[in-house]
Length: 336
Image (cartoon, rainbow, N blue to C red; front, side, top):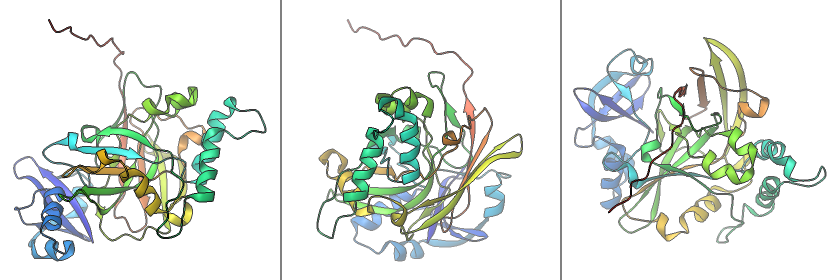
């Protein structure tokens, strides 16, 4: 089952069930996936039954909406509609071998020719201890913070390279979507395709710049997948410039292609008390298999990044927007 969030300038927010080539609107009682799932969880109801009972006969043409030819817009696949500050964006890196190898190349100046960088060492720790037996806890992965829901973007939204950035580059990933229940337990809502979008030039300068390099706007969607198989997921990522494809690559994700199990990644994220606050949501990125920066592609203004994964619905597409204004100092006022 797949859901999509929509916005209309006159009708406001709506959600719909994807049944190609149509979208079946859910009752106006629920104008966000957040409210729908929160109600189902709090009332201990089957989510799928809850959705079916609230799906109307109203249909929309998905082709027209995906091609952006009407007034309906596609929102991020999941968000907090009332308080974006209650949405945490985060991720785990070094979960895929190709990503670790790219990091090894980026940071090899910090190691001698025959040594491993810290990045490769952390990846290998995952290979050795990231998939523990049931009931056990494995090695912890790398963890990073990407901001809150104010930075979250959806299908067709520009992903901005701000004036203070050195670069911007796509990272095709799968994101896990989580809601913390009133019982302070994390509930996995589902998964969505994602473009984690980071500043690889800044990171390459020095690994200690990883944290600020991640504070960029990511995109998820267009669809929320409730029952995806997270074992072996094939996909494609591509970059178009002036209508011509300049780079593309087959990509893989899912547990079979990662150094950590999903359970281990989730444990190490939600072990922190502050990550289990009732009513908050978490969008957690699970790492990339390939990105164009690793093959010396530098994105330009208006380049189009496209990501697709089998079984995750229609393509996630976002243009690159590079700010032209110069960075200016932020003045802090003294309270008197």
